[in-house]
Image: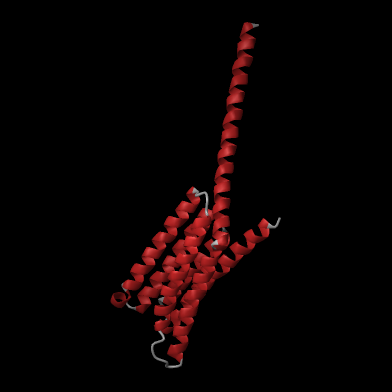
Length: 212
């Protein structure tokens, strides 16, 4: 009788421990999911930046392309004007959004480091343009666009960003077989697929979920 009581006590305690472990595991998964969803919501709000930078770079590339086609000089100034202007607008927007953000998550921190590294890589690539030339620079930029959106899409489990990044990689590869002028069109396609379309989809998805 004592053996049976001890046995049932042992089994019950093990079951309780297993249930507690399952509860802790479920709670941990819920916390992780909430962190990801919070980061997604933030990026959906900040989807403005994906969309803005996508169209900003596309505008610069197409203006430059049009001036080359029409034999208008100094079309490259579109980059010199639009990129710093975009940086100022992004800094102001990021500062305002940062003041609204009350809670920081690990996922949000990872994304901040990701885009920070991307920004540093992009600046260094552009600074080295005179040494390596336009063709290599545009190739590297499309690789950077693809890497950033691929990792970001993986962190957020958002497939349009991952698919868009693959288009950017493909455009980078194709650009090797094109002239410098055609690269301006290719980089526009890369930004449309990896930034603009996923940015609109992400923003639209979470705006609709907020109304459910």
